[in-house]
Length: 186
Image (cartoon, rainbow, N blue to C red; front, side, top):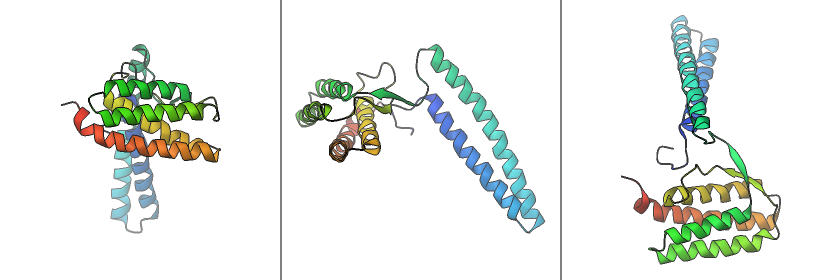
């Protein structure tokens, strides 16, 4: 998550809240089922600490949510995307990675596959949000496309679309691994 170019502060805090809630549930379970009084007391203290952490992280998550809204961003979730949108983003990525002819050709080939698929697939599907201002960030764009193809594969009801989405996800994962070491910010 720390290396992701797509994760917002809100999303990171939301993940932290979920983990603290799981920890609270774990320690509550231990306290409820412990036979030894000292184990029960220790587990109750740990559960209380996790509850306090959860409350603190929820406050910070709310602040991040409002900060994202005030800056015009979208704090989390998914948006409806069309294959035409992904085609345009693949072409944008190809332009940005011209210095790597093999990866640029792969992005253009993927754009062509998306155009062919566009006639047979649903008009829209839910995909992750590409944060504002990241259209020129090679690593963010490559990560976004990878997530979008994985999401398309997860939600597809059509065997042909599923097969193409899995192929494109495989290409995108390979590309992400190839580009990531070169495109990381210092």
